[in-house]
Length: 485
Ligand code: BG6
Image (cartoon, rainbow, N blue to C red; front, side, top):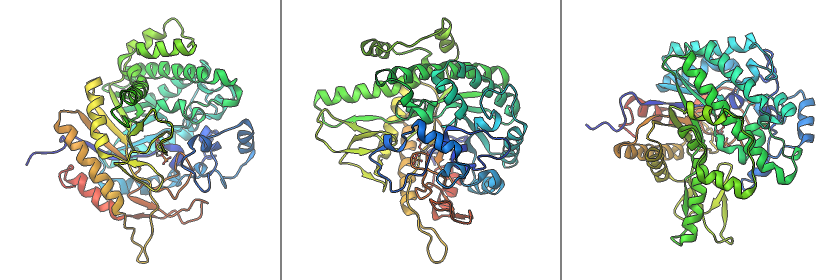
């Protein structure tokens, strides 16, 4: 039989600290930007920007509120106290890898401390020990929408150059303390999302900038993240032998709505713009067409003398990305636009969609893999892909989720086809193996897991973990290395 996936393929799942850990004020943890996110009742998926709106007033209100009532990310699914049980379930699924993030504020509560907080180090050491017990390879994101609130308020988040130093110190503490457990690292989750939700991604509070200066501030903050990512990559290689560092982007391949050259051109612009983020981290330089674009827009990025050299010196080793959908673009302003993951696009009539309006496109994954590999010629890692859905617990206690199985089956077929075409795909981590709090809406009811968590949007529930029907299915996929889908 011809194997569909490489022998060492890293099958697993992905989670993020701010969406699972809870224990937001335990063990000396400081406030993070995620702790400011309130539950968005009755979701209007068409308004992502509205969902993620933060104001100084909302932040002030949240900072003085000591409860987790309307701040679901503060409670997560209490992974902080359930990590052993959860990792045992991941091991039962046969995970080769678990992608998780380290909450910066557990190690450096304000971001400015010079030494890491011992309780934070102890927690992650226990988590990594547990993973080691089951031979699950961790892949760690250093920054997944959870930077210290203090840095946001004091320096305007990543707009302030000072944050580079604080992030590098945090990263180096992670490499030094966890380097014996962790070989794979990602610097910034979906670094491109800074333009779509600058507070969550970079601690930027829009109202602190004049309207005509906000875009420039965002790109300045992004530049600081690029520099920080390269410096962290350099330190990681120096501190941990054989370590591998990846960038992480939201892959939103954009199709032209028609073959009208204007539509094709519009889609091309959008794709060039999306590729910009990985281009810098892979090639170590700003793409010419982006620099020209900045020039035309009057955007001036302040760079220190050595910045270009820093970027050039430490490119990433591999490219990781999330994939939920493709987008479609058109020059026709009258066409209906639909919600995507923190973005909007024209409705693609050839695709079905989830209850949250996210269009489902497995072939788009194959296309994205081929395009990325052709462009970068470096190993690829899908570190997020999955389907948010409302699951129902049946009277007999079972949870039947054939839609989730169908979703993954088609995406896995697309991956196998891309591998057959010659793409070097090294792993896949589902988003998310266990139900968790949604990044965009803070809902629990938008469920992604193979494992159900008994908790509703208001935080009611026993937190009991239950296997869904998809649990057995994914377990068999891993067992057969993707040969039985
Ligand atoms: C990705 C994020 O964009 O999408 C995750 O990295 C997030 O943190 C995932 O959870 C799904 O989005 P949502 O809004 O459905 O949780």
